[in-house]
Every structure is written in structure tokens, then in C-alpha cells.
Amino acid sequence: MSNYRRVWQPGGTYFFTVNLLRENNTQLLVQEIDNLRQVVRSVKKRHPFIIHGWVVLPDHLHCVIELPTNDQDFSTRWRLIKMAFSKTQPANERRSATRLKRGERGIWQRRFWEHLIRDIRDYKAHMDYVHINPVKHGLVRHVSDWPFSTFHRLVQQGIYPHNWAGSDNDELKYND
Image (cartoon, rainbow, N blue to C red):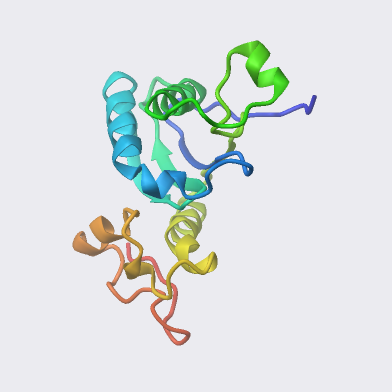
């Protein structure tokens, strides 16, 4: 078993990557985007957090979220999101013997990757990474073409220009 070392910071702002299991439906998250959104809203009501940036791709998601001042428990939030989303899906995925023995579904990878945001430069870099990801994966040519992203809200707020990362000549710049 790997020795994971997590950084627990009450009120911390974190970047996360959460993946589906590769052997299952690799379009599931975009096909079931409404269920995923509802699950996130529901968990957010019971265990508040602020969504700074979020992108949902067919088989994984990235986000930058901020926890309440007195709270450092991001693991519970991800456990509840994964569990509730899994319950919205028919139980017809392939499951390993270990998952069957533990009564686990076979939709998500067990773990997630997290990074505590250290400063404004780190924050901007991770926000950019979140939003450029559909282009990076070849899903769209322009960031603005991907519908499952907070990019559109941030454009409305004047944080990103609409054509951000829209062509090879565009400068990647997050506006303060």
C-alpha cells in the first residue's frame, strides 16, 4: 500500500483530480452531467465549500475548491460525491473481487489527487490548468467550446476573456 501524505489545512484551497476507473464507461461523467451536478449541489449543502474552478471531462474531473475556515475534511466530501453519484447509476459495471467483497461500486478510482494551493501564483496556474484541460485532451479547439466548465461563469465575471486560449497566438492569462 502506498504511503500517501495529505496536507490538511483548515480553510484551505485545493486543486483536485478525480478519475473514473478506466475499464468502465469512459463517457460517463459527461453523459450523466445532470446527476453529477445534483450530487455536488447536495453534498455542498451539507458540507459547504466554494467552487472556484471546475471542469468535467468524459472520464475525470478537475477542480479548485475552498473549504470553510474551520474545516479541513475534503475526503468526506469526495467520498459522499462519489458514493451518491454511483447510486444514480445502474449496478452493471465490472467489479473486481476486492470491490465485490467490500460492497464497493466499480465506477471511480478509489483515491483522488489533491494539491494544497500555496499562493496566488499557484492558484492562477491551477485555475488555468482546470480550464485548458478540454483543449489539452483534444476534446475541443477552444476553451469556450467546452460546456462542462466554470470557464463560462468566470468569463461573465470578467476573470477570463471569452477567447482565452482560443488560438495559438492567444496569451494564457488569468485576469485579477
